[in-house]
Image (cartoon, one colour):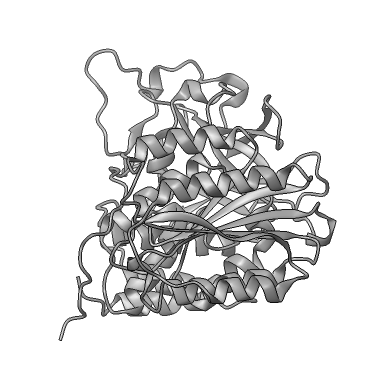
Length: 479
């Protein structure tokens, strides 16, 4: 018997996959960084239950960014992250190359941070009654409490039909009071999401007056069906609140009403990250093992722009980041919002690039108005051996002017251990297979498994071993 498909009330962002681009026509690629991991956890939940995820639910960059890749850690806080670049042969096409860009944020011990002010904004509507929703949510927040310090403070706002303050701001050293409030949560009613957001931001603003940092952590199955519910309206509201210095992170729970589109809108405009909590193990990863990166921002509005050299690269394709694309002119515009990086976070991006003269070239030269590589001046003189030029812009928290980091890339650039780059390639290939891409030829899930198994590397928490298990499950999952 085929696994039961849950009611299809779930929503995911609509985004077409990135196409192959000809360097002589479009030499520059620009996008905002993404540290979300919700897509990986959702894919895992589907495969664990014997189902293949729908293609819209798969964002390859979130699968790739679920893992760390042994990037060097920055030595100080003057520059909030290190930048690493490597070029390797593409596993699924010997005639192309993979350009990997990696960022590693510096880590801050929790005991060196100012007091944290956290508002738990909890969806208690009727749709949250399932065991993998409100009960798992309660367990997850109890885990988070175990990671915080006595001087940190927590408030709880709930919403269902109407919003209410369940717990006034309370120091974590009064753990019993906080746990009692969490244990008292019950589901029922409709979903007054906007009223809940308003109440949570108001409390966070009050808590911020006493010093420290403030963040709202929204926990929901994603269903906002009362009040301000349109994505554009919510986007504007969250953006306005962000300017007050209060961040918003989003934790998704359960199935049936899961609204990934809404989660992405809220997190991307709230200077926070989106995660999907499908198990208590995932809750521990996000809220215990990565607690500092989940609640502390070290760099804001981080953008990446890559200029490809038409003398050496004929074509390129960015793997993932479709929902994070920026215009070329956005890169130098400090008023344009982009992704944030938390303490200790890593960010990875992969381009598949086709060298000039490679038989893998897909696009023909135009008859009129197109410049061929052969017609370029000894193309770019001193830069003739470069494949690309990588630029990053970021702001330190609270700043309005960005800083710039640049890195040239040549064919022998190898700033990332090869085994780490190959593991990332396996994950990138798997994500594309789940999306149904036609760029991988006859490369298969089995090939992704062999590549990952040969490059497991250091795996202290077992996340890479779990990935191998998912690859094996994918071979038997039902569409």
